[in-house]
Length: 246
Image 1 (cartoon, rainbow, N blue to C red):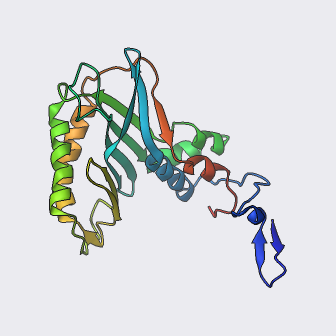
Image 2: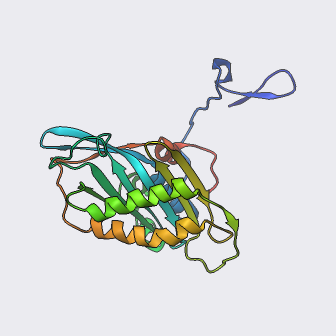
Image 3: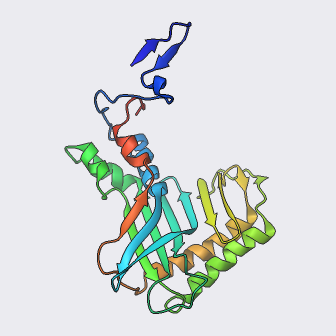
C-alpha cells in the first residue's frame, strides 16, 4: 500500500519501522512462458550455498570452493565443487571431503512440462524443473578432479582475470558467472562471452567441465540418507512476490 507522506512524496507501508516493507495481498498469476520459467530456474541454479549430509553418523557441511553458472540459451547449468573445512587441513580418512554438483535446466523440456501441468506454481515449487546430481568423494576416490580444481583456482589467483572486449555472436556460452572461495581469496565475476572474454577461464573451462562430468558419473561415497541444502531466499520470494511482469 502506498500512502501520501505529507511532504510531496510517498512512503511504503512499513517504512516507519526503518525498512521498506510490503504486504502480499494475493499471489500473482504466473504465466507458462520462457521468461517466467527461466527467471525461476536461474534463481534455483544460483541459490544453493551449502550442502550437508551424514556419513557413518557424522554430519558434514560442504561449502562452495569453485562454482560456475553457464547459460547457453537452450539450457543453463551449474557445475560446482564444494568442500568441508577440513578438506585441505586434516589427514583424510575414508569419508568424503568434497561434493561435486551438476544442476541443469533445459528450456524446451521445461516449457513442454509447464504447459501440461494444471497448477504452475506447484510445478515451479517442486524439484522437477532442475536436474540435480550431487556426488561425494575425497582425494583418494577421484584425485584428478580435485587436482584440476586446485590448479584452476590457483591459476586465477596467480595470473588474475583480465577482461577484454570481444565480438562473438556465435559463441555457445551466452553468460558465465563464476565464484571462488579459497583459503586466501574469495571473488566472483559475471560476464557475457559474446561481447567480452577472459582467456584464462575459457581456455581452461572445457577441460575442467570434463573432469567434473567424469567424476559426477563415477561411483561415489554414499550418504546415510537425504542431503540438506541451504539456499538463498530468492526462490520462495520469486514465487510469492507481487509486481514482477511475466
